[in-house]
Every structure is written in C-alpha cells, then in structure tokens.
Image 1 (spheres, rainbow, N blue to C red):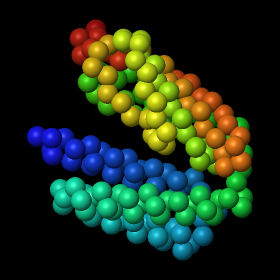
Image 2 (image 1 turned 90 degrees about the vertical axis):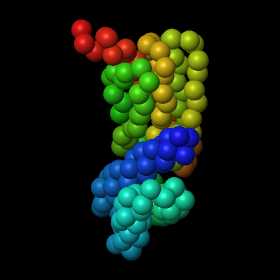
Image 3 (image 1 turned 180 degrees about the vertical axis):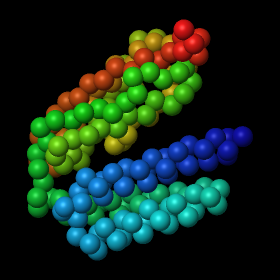
Image 4 (image 1 turned 60 degrees about the horizontal axis):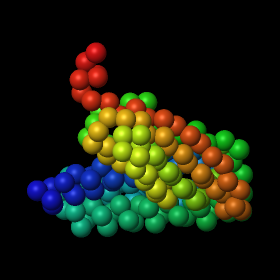
Length: 174
C-alpha cells in the first residue's frame, strides 16, 4: 500500500511538474531560445510517456530530467532578469479535510528562491517549504494562513499572503 501511495504522490508531482513546465514555457515564450524550448518540450513528452508505465523509477528519472532542463531557463534569464514587483498566490479558497492543499503563484518578474510558511489554526502547527509549489494535507477543519516570500537572483524579495479554509464534508453540504 505504501508503494501505491508514493506512486500516487509521484504521479501527482509529475503532472504538476508538466503543468509548471508548460506554464513556464508560455510565460517566457518571448525570451526562450528555440533550442531550450525543444529540450524542455522533449522532457515534458518523455515524462508524459512514462506516466502510464506505473514504474516509479522511470517516472522519477523523467521528472528529474524535466526539472533539470527547466534550469536552462534560469540560466538564460540571468542576463535579462526582471525584478518582480508583485506575486499573486494561486490557491483554492477551500479544501476538504484530508485533501491536498496545493498553492502556486504568479509573478511579473523572475523569482528563484521561495519560502512558504503555513500556520494552521486547527492545532497551531506551522509548515515551511522552499519548493516552488506549496503542498500539504490537513486532517482537521481550520484555517491555513499562507505566506510566501519569493526572491529574485539579485536578492530582491516580495511577499504574498493567502488564506485557505479547511472544511469538513458536512460543511460542504450546507
């Protein structure tokens, strides 16, 4: 059963990785050189092909390849890095107890470092993450106060905040 749940998590990470890569390609369409675009599109395609294999090692290797190919974007952008002045967190307003809370963000500039902090009203717990996407599961109702501090390669940082209500299935029916 543990293998199955880690496969589910891996598949979820892989599909979110594909989505992020496609979003990055779209957001940087004007500045990506064709060779870099081709490399990233090939890695997305490879990952999509192994998703159906149910082989965790192949999926993880393809996901790692995709993530590494996205670093090419950061290298390209260093010369033309635009400082970000806004960051908008993209989170659902409500999530049912036990379901995955996943939050990303949109920015008008290039950000390379991320520090998420989530404080949960249910038990006062705090989760920190330096991933580009924040992800957590809460097992009781309450409010998650989410803060993202994101920084550019030059060290300029901006902050975004968002609140997610964690509700019970009974609260949904009301």
